[in-house]
Length: 90
Ligand code: SF4
Image (tube, helix red, strand yellow):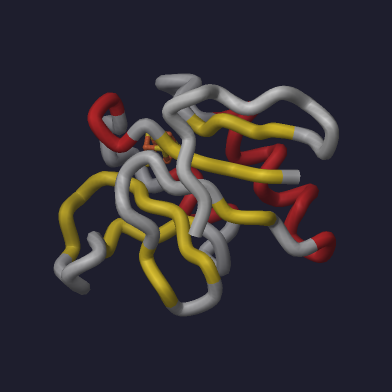
């Protein structure tokens, strides 16, 4: 499963970070707390629009974060589904 966040629409509620800090962070690519969510690929903070593969051990927490995100801006993509043309990969 792949994940990305539309940080432009993030309210910064922190729900996703609380549920799965291994995948979500409020630190931007420069390492500064931006108050909006970004996705982590290991220790690397992805730039807006980048996607990363979610390790199996974090899938349940990421799905829950996507379901509870008030802005519905955590996007999930299962294997085999077509990708949005603007998506980039790490
Ligand atoms: S749960 Fe959604 S709105 Fe809240 S910080 Fe995460 S991405 Fe942003």
